[in-house]
Image (cartoon, rainbow, N blue to C red; front, side, top):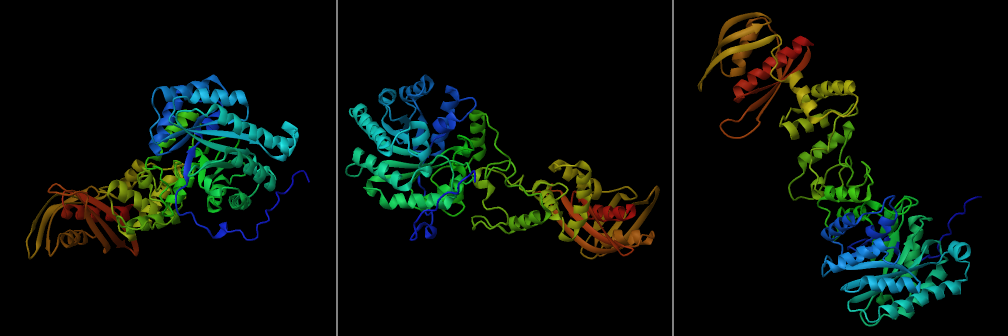
Length: 543
């Protein structure tokens, strides 16, 4: 076999499968380092500043800003943030460095004047890295890490600000677990955290090469066996080579991790880093406050897209253009009913929508879009939510068929405007054959008297009638003129409030054993009802 199956972890008493995520981890954004180094065109200074400000606004308290010893651009950005006092008091900036003395020395120079810093040291530890890249033994690789610790102590020993230490055995998931433990313990003892101090042990899935449950086993094993556990924060940093970074991160938290490194929307090397927006909003939908502000995901998407020059996929979880949109008729019908029953401030309980779009700054306007796959429920929802037309349930199939026919010809998604126009064209205030003009009415408690011109095609006649109600009076005239029908459904409502409120009515009529629907709009319910009845008769005539 060309490829080898990843070995299972011997952890028969694993505890993580029964664990739950019940609080937010410590979050660290690595957009400005890991994300930036993965871009075809790295961010300019202006883009980095804008991105940094976004991260602060979202609520990150730890932000990896770069690799200042790797290039002058990274160095200058670090200095810019510090010298221009752009780092809030409660935000810690993090930098990455290899275990090389000159790089650590330059990192200390780059960070001078900063109030709160994390120095992130890493060196590769996997068998492939040791054998192919470094050609060194396990002991020699440990010595590299320990030398790095000593150089950090040397060059940051007199640092005026607060210094915290982070170590990553890079390519942790491809490292023998006992060896990963050995090098991690050696580094912890060498750093020697005292009292309440907590160093960070970052255990990255640098190249995702196993299933998420294996990563969880690895994290739980390390959490159980590292020395000075109370003085160590375990951090996970998952890449997405197998498409499982979110699951790996969540299971890693269940397995004992305290901290998460990732990027907004998942940009990173190869297939990317874990998407912190997705992980955070997954928590939110389970009733856990992620301690990050995702109430305006459109702003996050805009800044990330401009900064990274990468377009966000329309199906990207929580933030894509179509993630709250249903095209399927059955989905639309369920969503429509769910939205209708959802009470303000009540527990969210809407089919197919695991989160209220308004919680992330989205409106309800795009929840349902209409194409040839859509059904009557979706059309009804658009007519109600956008135009205010509350068509009766029995009318929905008739309207749905008309809109679907329009969609079939359009070959794509119908805009809300097209749906409204199509509805009005086929059902509203129709006068093609039957019409009533110059209608006058007198209404009292006992009866309604009407008089007006009634037209059947081009033939019109002045007619009078009286009955208990306006519809009975108008209907009696049409019956007298030879138009036979039976009213089977009726509904009405106003489109607005106040004295000038427009009214809308809907009629279903049976003509020769077939049912037809029409709608009418007018200055009051009486005129709207007449227009609706006349429309229904016109629909029947055209059938």
